[in-house]
Amino acid sequence: MDTHTQKLIRDIEAEVRFTRHMIGRDQLDPRVMAVMASIPREQFIPPRLRHMAYVPLVNMEILLRPEK
Image (spheres, rainbow, N blue to C red):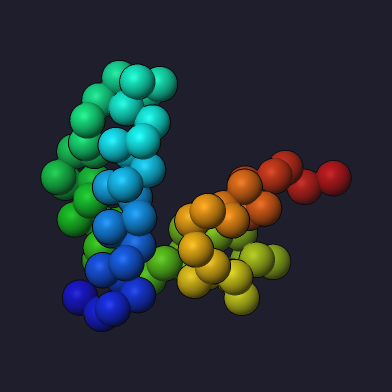
């Protein structure tokens, strides 16, 4: 697993811990995490924003805004 992917997985795990009271779980299913680790990060982002694939998750709200 490359450095960017390792950071993605750590960031996702931190987000899950931070939001556990909202999502009702302490961690995502290990199978989900394994798939996320095996797919390039930019594949999770709309094509128009793939250049931002490695922006820290603290800025993810930019990526999650609906298109107008």
